[in-house]
Amino acid sequence: MHFLVLTSSPNIDGLTAACTSAALEGIRQAGSSADEIRLNDYRVGMCEACGNGWGTCQADHSCQVLDDFQALHERALKADGLVLISPVYWGEMSESAKAFTDRLRRCEASSGRDSRLAKKPVLAVAAAGGSGGGMITCLLSMERWIQHVQARPFDLIPVNRWSREYKLKAIQAAAFSMSSNPAW
Ligand SMILES: Cc1cc2nc3c(=O)[nH]c(=O)nc-3n(C[C@H](O)[C@H](O)[C@H](O)COP(=O)(O)O)c2cc1C
Image (tube, rainbow, N blue to C red; front, side, top):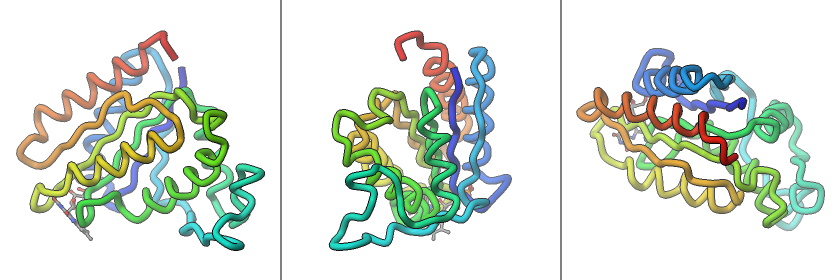
């Protein structure tokens, strides 16, 4: 199986990066493959709410705002599952994660049960490296996103600097379990 690990921190050696390494390790241990996508390295603008609120996302399930989104959208559809790892900013996903997931949701949630992400497992991780707060509100919006695109919430893991040591092990174990599950 092949997974896409989407990360959204500008920091290349912070908590988000440590969570990403743990997830990649779990996937590889299970004999699956993964591509890491550092969303901050791509040009993905925010949704422009085209037309009266819907653009081509509604009928064609593609985004008319042309940038790096289209290629990443294709890669997400080809993957057997996703790992979404975001630093917690103001109790929410970071801006790069929000921009990408907002546009992906519009394209796929508008298909209802025919969403091309339907039933794909998603492991979501909220990494709070500051006050340590806001992990749950961040995961809440990640969970809502998973529901809207009809994917499966394989697990939702909060991590902060106090829980880091044992949560990295949990992330690795969750990624291993998700990518060795024959159910998908
Ligand atoms: C704009 C902004 C808002 C933040 N808000 C929170 C927050 O609500 N809770 C928290 O624990 N940390 C917060 N932080 C700290 C980040 O979660 C912390 O830097 C985290 O470790 C980011 O991951 P990184 O280590 O990969 O950079 C914030 C950081 C920034 C830049």
